[in-house]
Image (cartoon, rainbow, N blue to C red):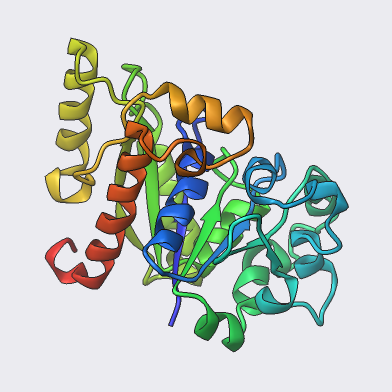
Length: 267
């Protein structure tokens, strides 16, 4: 049975999409079958994972919202990486979302309704890349269908924790009626530089805010190979297996698996 994990942060530039795509790659290398659902109309996860342009894909996340016969299994396409499938997004998804009325059930439970039995059995992990917002159709839908959520937090800025209270409150409101069993899997510290005092202070601040058990032990260090891979729309381990960024995401994928399999130790 698939584990559905949403990656969310209302703040942009926290390596959320980078973490989704590279975690998917790490899970795939751990022999897991992975589906990535790009819930962000910017489509950056799709650009990294697609074998062709997101605008050339015959099926996208729009079809889940507009075609009553589509579900996760039928909407998923092969990515450029064997073992990772993808539900594609592009900017057109934003225009589609704008057409949904305020009381349209699709604003809240479309993805939950389209999560079919074939997808549950086919995939080990389903990762959702959420847009940087506190509300909106795609964040609401992601939080309604997910089993867990991960909050990526960059450690370079003293403002990194600003607004996290609002994010957690928004998630609480979204899921109170639609998904009361949703659990926070942990906070993932990104862009970490252990050589700087600011980096060390932010890491301690994040642990102090969430509690040590709610922060992943793996940190994603600032690494130029990650940036270079992003510019080439590739996962970092595909770009350079020897890069520290590659090892970080391998370690994080393993820790994510362990944390879910031993959830009671982290609850």
